[in-house]
Image (tube, rainbow, N blue to C red; front, side, top):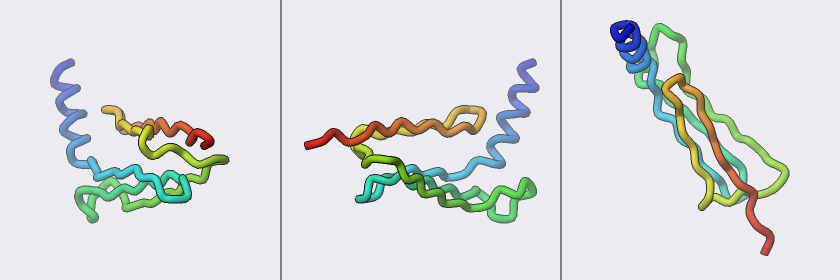
Length: 82
């Protein structure tokens, strides 16, 4: 079982990318990703996704985490009215 887990982790190391989650002045989320190798055999390509929400988000309270399974979770609370 342990060797299977190590094989999966080794495979993940080849596919890993740089992922950035940012907030722009309009309060949108911007998620960008860049593969470690552009000519990878898995077909992973650079991407940029702009997410518009119904209200501005609070960039100081926004956080993101990537799981070992490659899922991206973003917590982006709405900005409080002044």
